[in-house]
Image 1 (cartoon, rainbow, N blue to C red):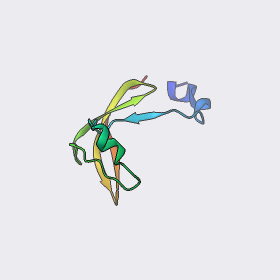
Image 2 (image 1 turned 120 degrees about the horizontal axis):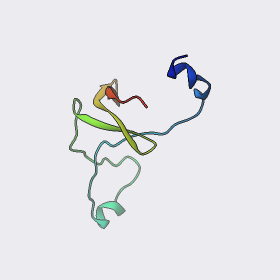
Image 3 (image 1 turned 90 degrees about the vertical axis):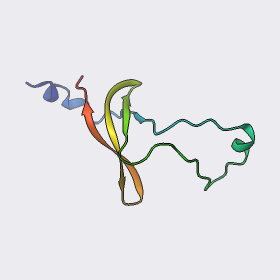
Length: 81
């Protein structure tokens, strides 16, 4: 039995995947002016590499992609557990 077949019964267990697009510093005044519809610019753009975390552990990397009107991550490297 392969490792993938061994863990198949756990296939329905939800796992949080985290990708960090950017970090920004805002002043308190800027923070207080944020409202629904506000835009916080990032220094990242489509095509750039990004880290992928599962359960707080770095487990891969990806590339920022634009899919229609949304951003997504294309996995480019993934470490098996």
